[in-house]
Amino acid sequence: MKPKLPRGIFVTGTDTDVGKTVVTAALACCIKNSGNEVTAVKPFQTGTEDEGLLDIEFVYKALGNTFDLDEVCPVKLEKPLAPYSAAIIEKVKINIPEVVNSLKEKFMSSAGTTLFEGAGGLLVPITADYYMSDFAIDMGIPIIIVSRPGLGTINHTLLSIEYAKKKGLQILGIVISNYPSEPGLAESLNIGAIRQLTDVEIIGVIPSIEGLDVQKGLIGMIAENSMDFFAESLGGKLNLNNFLT
Image (cartoon, rainbow, N blue to C red; front, top):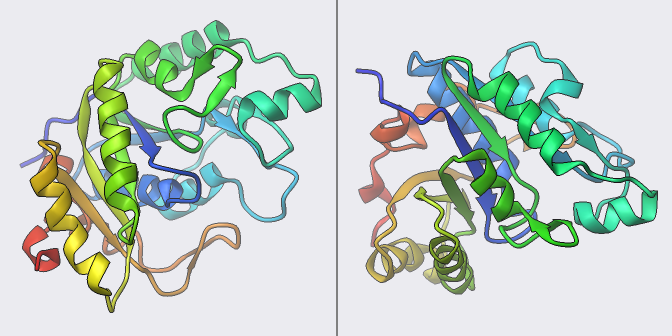
């Protein structure tokens, strides 16, 4: 049975380099493998001057679908900084209403689900008075929070949840990214602790995937195994008990 998914989902993180791109790619594959239509968008991409694949290029490589880069990545900035800072350095004006309206018209009016991958966390600035959380609000879509498994993740995760709730955002759940094959004490206990400390469900656990490298475009077995990573509500078959101590 196909899950009933929202028209759009915003993938945010507790921090930068937390694994949002891998989660977005895996979730896109999971949704596709469950028989649902899916597209992916990276609205604000910085660090384009760096070598390697862009985040959205990695997602579509894993997904195996064709795409128009300018459509799925409308704002591209060279410096690996928050969009607000990169835009100042590069003297670029980001037209928020234009980006939001264009993405709504192109993706939110079509069938299926579109995954919108953010940059960093909810309080990463896009302009001086507009943050990633504001983008999710303006798009009218729920969010998924991507968290690390290790020490410090309880604080970062609970802070992200508290802020999201204060902003009135709907939280679909938490996805733990890059869970190690040999977890230490913190990793072994953190998933259970987060479940006890918040009413937000853990709807995904992405293990450390051998041979995976976003910048090099190495997707490993992410597509084939994607349904094992996510809960039934997202089209997967995750058994969270495997990660509880």
